View 1 (cartoon, rainbow, N blue to C red):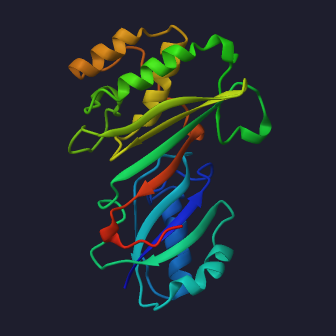
View 2 (spheres, rainbow, N blue to C red):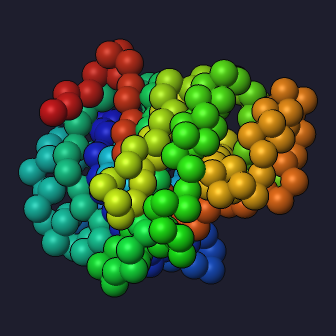
Length: 253
């Protein structure tokens, strides 16, 4: 039978989600755990492929097992997994349900902190600027500009393997967190490799007068690279939401 699992993880110690031959990954840790506890070879398929150091508040993968009730083993699975990976729920789904291809809504949050603190060093970008040095109106203008386009060559890593650069943006906005930081919220049907970090890096450069907003607009209009583009560090990025159509049959809280 096929099941979906909902998990959270801190990406600091991993070379990303996807299994790799010479580095530890979230996928490899989970496959080892499932195979050990269920006493059968388990391969899993994730809803996406987060990069090294990127975190997930909500992430899904699917797997198949001969276990009739894997939900009964959640406590044992979490006891076996590293402390920075947690299984929150397991749900039986139709045999054709696919964690990656059936997802129709994904959301990310990117955290920026203006205050040096050891407690958020692995979960935010600690920007060496005071909040007053960042023009929030320009950040907002950049976020609004993103929503006007559907193709994102300027915000895709050059070594991508995407078959299309089209994305439908559902949300793009910046939020102030007091005087100490910012959060960028973005949601879409799909994302390109490195897209959110490139958008955040570009937005901060616009808001600190290192790039003109007109340059960003021109790059989106003509689908060209942005001069002096910058990818924000991985540690501030969280996959925060993944949604599926009702046909997948998830029973979510």
